[in-house]
Length: 378
Ligand code: NAP
Ligand code: GDD
Image (cartoon, rainbow, N blue to C red):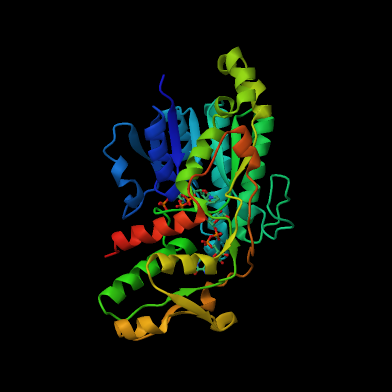
């Protein structure tokens, strides 16, 4: 029997990359849940729309009835919950919507599974943002939650809900605590894509001898543990099939055909995992590498809100440019409270699930900038 996967957040970066991964590496049938929208947002998933293994279904995480109806209709073997209001910056502007989507939405998924299909496996997209004001680096699974944003609080709450449902009802439910992962399908308001798009735009403007548009950013000193989403969706699938990828569990369970015999036995051994590169880099480092990839030489000048990344003088003369500012600070992008540094320890996922990211930080920056230079926005 082919496994059936229901993905929330199908149109997002991870949803699209996971769909591609499942099409390549499994025989699963995929149901991509999308919200009703006046202007559907299928940019990330357009290549899957004609695939007979992918079906679009309508639902909304803030509507319990829609989630329950879908679980009843589809009878999924996996419900992979990637849907969320995922932008930390706006969580102060719409706190209720963030909690409704990121926390109540998870409760609705868990209730639907519990009452309709308790042997459906559940994945929750937890976040390194839950570590918040960190006490030590790298952060491991034992690090306490010290969230600094409403988004972070919403993800801590949903993380605990998953734990309680798992322990109370014996669900195969897992939280992947994922550090920042980006890529060519990243939304434009996240800092990596904002920089990559801005650099590609400046590259294009210089080549056409047009005035250049500086990139306006907030906290340049924030440090993140950045990876490629395409590597992380592989880790998500491994977490959802732990007895297949973890040799110890494999020996213990597969040999005993536990699927049919004893579903309640396994859940106690199902673990949450961190996915991370183990490196941390500042927003400034991302900027420097991104401009380097576009062959635009620059240097830093000034401090605090006056700090700027300026284009090298010889390039101003060579291209007869109107301005020398490549990047400047705009306080409107500062957050009311900031997570200054994140760096994750993913040793257990590497050892037990045999998971290994392939794309380095340098390769990620290169890939995002190159993609935007080769596919200019119209
Ligand atoms: P993303 O690109 O912002 O995608 C979010 C998805 O959620 C979109 O498909 C969006 O649909 C959907 N969505 C939003 N509100 C919804 C609702 N009420 N009902 C149903 N769907 C809804 O996010 P991502 O980067 O792929 O992240 C996937 C998940 O991982 C999120 O839960 C995020 O919080 C979590 N996470 C991400 C990272 C990271 O660095 N990327 C790290 C840790 C955890 P529309 O297209 O209609 O807006
Ligand atoms: N978005 C944005 N825009 N961030 C900026 C800017 C800017 O103009 N300037 C500086 N930053 C800083 C932010 O203040 C933050 O410290 C850092 O860049 C990264 O911001 P984002 O790219 O928005 O990502 P995030 O780390 O807040 O959240 C992402 O990672 C989380 C996991 O740690 C998202 O993908 C979350 O959904 C995810 O849970």
